[in-house]
Length: 197
Image 1 (spheres, one colour):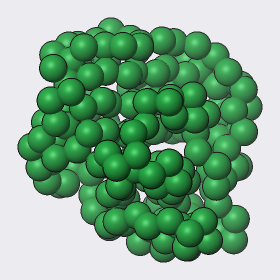
Image 2: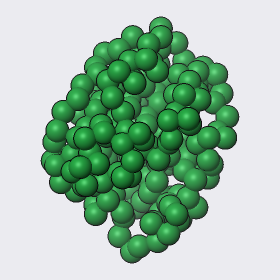
Image 3: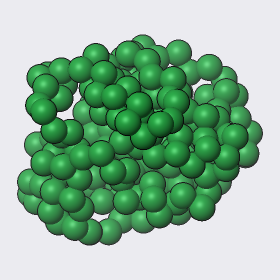
């Protein structure tokens, strides 16, 4: 499905990073090591690399990763892009200073716990998680994401899943986003920024 969705001339979600990531750019340390999960066409990993971060990024779509490599080349940065499935990714313990997960709303409620656990496990102590996604109210808005509210996040869900971390920000809000044709319009959003003790 994702190969087909990314098989358009333009970038489905645009080439600019998520506004959430830009808002937290002050927390990005040059030389730190980041993992960007399910990064699609590379807009967020390329942005991190432009900030001097050493980036590993993966996505299940070979088409998306090819476009991500092209974007990195055009921007003159290096990213270690890999083709991999998030449900079988090996979450190497204590390997990254930063994990970025933006709009990974394809995970079912059954898949979420192991992925959320993996993201925490692969962070080094003191490492930061930046997670940004949709709330269930997004389905009625229809401006992006799947039509299934069980794939979305609530504050309660994230508080439970990441309760072992030190939460710096957990916020629900609505905002207008313009990210290609894939995410466009008023959106029901939720942010989590948390640090591994």
